[in-house]
Image 1 (tube, rainbow, N blue to C red):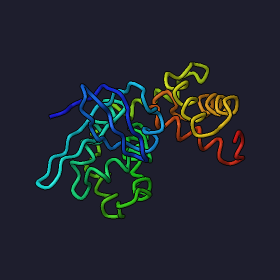
Image 2 (cartoon, rainbow, N blue to C red):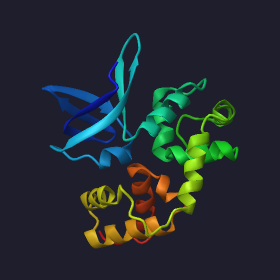
Image 3 (cartoon, helix red, strand yellow):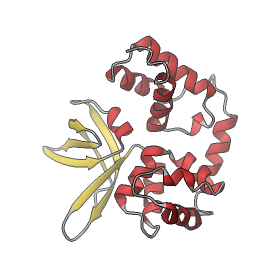
Length: 207
């Protein structure tokens, strides 16, 4: 079982990345936002889930242990496969998923491709009470001082610049997101990037 990989990113295309470790290239599927934080030739570290089936073996990569834990919990729900579970994490971070479950917000899951109304409700029922640690993270994040620097801030600025935004506008969007986005302290790199992109897109500033 491959639990994690640390090596050189040698290819990034959409949500597919190749990480070379000891001369061997491992194909890993990640969320699109996670892929945007990776650069060709840079060292990367991902926690992984290895899914073995009769006709294929797949590696799914995550930036945090929390994301991997939620991925495994989602896969335990009937009707939710690894691609759908990763799709949920592409739309929401672990704290937001916990918040949706806690508030019976099945609509948050229906937004994910491949998850219909019945499966969305089943996720709520199946994961109820299993994400309390992440619910606490939501509360802690809401109370956190927005002036505190986010550990992923610089990575997100770099990713936005790589997408074509001017550095000053990218940095301003990240600062505004940290100051104003509820639960920002609980966000990982992917969630902060999504939120910062949301702040940039309405005006198209910086391109």
